[in-house]
Length: 617
Image (cartoon, rainbow, N blue to C red; front, top):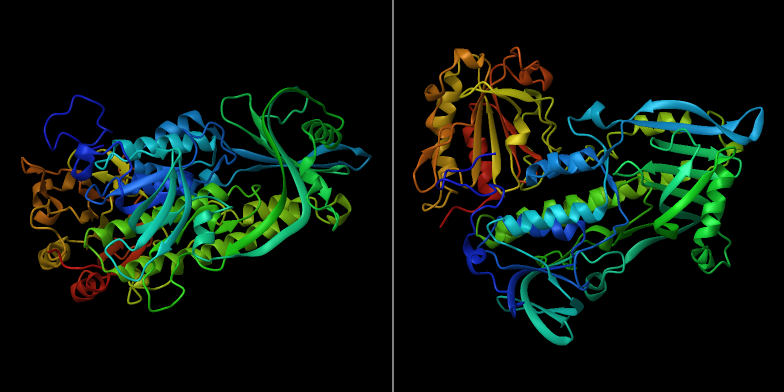
């Protein structure tokens, strides 16, 4: 963490200096805003945290609840989400309080006593096998708390306006703030005018209804009970994630944070065509009894039920993620999270995909509203995120079907475990790959950086900082501050990198405000092939030694070495298949690879940014 560059700091350095509208944030919800976020769920709170990094943009977030969420339904945190938490500055703290899924065990009927279950296999969880970040379980309410802290501690000082209910909206053809939003503000109906609105208001989204978008899909004929419980039990794997397939039904068992709480998804069986949702009235006593029946010969003595529900599996994707019904109109209203995709909870994807919706949208709104990018950028939100939602629905439909099978329908007892591990990259959040667009270069030279697939998130690796010899993950340097990352991997001698830096400085300066730091828009880092003790920091080009803040202090943390040392056991050139002749990897503010170019392709780099950004005024 870097601080003190604006002067000595003695307080918590995670509380960034207020700026822009954050210097005098009104306690009252104003009549006019730039961005109005409706709903403080995972997508909404991440979006607020991101917009707090754009303090000159007037952003407000409204929530009809009277205060913070106390008990959230979602709890699964995939490695990609933890990677995102790192960018927002709270990954280590939430990892410390969460439950780490290290293993997943599978149970099935005992061949000799079919009424009993036995453990059929143990598998390592996929989290730390494909990422430096773990697969976690932690209450959604705590995730929202951390994002709320990031929003409140960011320069924009954004906090939710509680007790404000969305009633409807109208998008006008003209006006600086063409979206007219009706709200009930703690008992008073009023109008708020906004430039843009983000509907983060859940599966029964009023924003979705207001812009005429429809959920496409249906509910499967299968019901599940879910409960968070404190128990005494003789089931030996109570603190291990388990998929249990028994003659009496199925259970997905997930230990929760804190060492005692666990969640169970209990199979309630097929739902009759004429049920008319009566299954949703299944009592908690019936759910507990069914769990005991499935777990036989083991028993649960439930001491407390923290939360429970009954749901029928639904798979729906909204027919559009924004209000641009005509192709020639820029969107003004956007849908995120459950407002545009719903599915079962068993794949642990709802909160995770919702947060990536917010991450994708946030920096784009910030860029457009601060004049960094043209309004066309906002059309890429729906173009990128709707295919991801459809992939999620397809995956969840298959996973849910596998989970709901009867024992006689299973020919291979290892099939579920095999599927769980074979598909790990998708649920972990690493399969998303955005196609070429104005922010994903179609002219990239992928062969120069095979380990950084174009359109996928930047997969970090360890490097050594030249200034002090400390080892850190290169990707962990990045923060969710709205800046682009330009990773310049040097040629063998470093001379090619020096020439590239000299040629590219005026290109980057074209988009950097004259009154801002030289790295206000682009965070450029150099990675050399030599050992750190063979390099001198001040020999690096000035591009990688920017002077920032009111004192013009040199930033010492942008020059790195890739060579293995006693502390760094990885060579990023080897592990990510990087050309030894040098390569430049451009990464978007939401951590996705946008361009891959050789050191002599300065014109191509210039052309890419010319299509993605606007020159600074």
